[in-house]
Image (cartoon, rainbow, N blue to C red):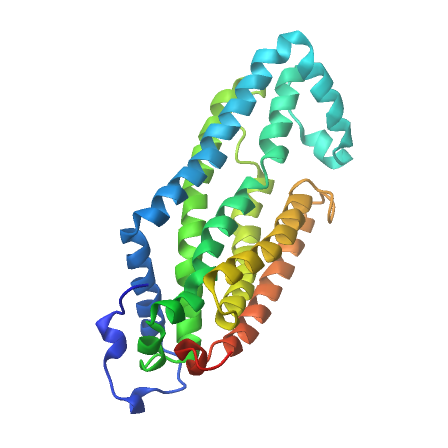
Length: 292
């Protein structure tokens, strides 16, 4: 963020109150989102990342499966499906080995992309969010603004959350179209998104993203450089990607009808707790760079 919205600077210091003001929170978020939108160095790689994971890579893999199906490779790949949980195998559709393999790849193999893309995009913003203010010298504006530390913290969370999740929703729609066009004919018609993917996208991914960002912003508030924050954020995201993938394939809590909802509820609870305590990591002194 290279500039601060003038509305953040309105009001005397006595205007600072402990009452939470959504407008001030949104001003913080809106200001950073505006700067991201104006930065080609950010949104061009963001679009490229989403295109690779949601469009190019899935299309290439699914087309390759269809091309080698007659050579017997699909038969070998189909035999590997037995390593999936029994409940997952029972849901695989298709009358041929090629169709079944394509279905399994579309539904289970690419499940991590729904986690990788938002975490990668959003943590790139969150890691530099607070420490970047100090490095650019703009932290002083926020520190002396009427916005409370809670409003600043949640505004930063929102500004980090929106780009990653919005890209994922657009990419998810594109991925659904690709899967149905390439796999649907052999799987009995349009079948995607499945219930598991819908639960993943709208119930599991949001709290996972919020939980990750709450931890990343804590690091961003405490470390001394953006590079250090980005390195540390990578250590946080990798375990979360593995956990989400385990649940998507049914190997973590099983493939029961209730397990994804339970998993998501746990994630929402952890995210709420982490956000609540994460506010403490943001202080005006840290924004000013006089306390670590």
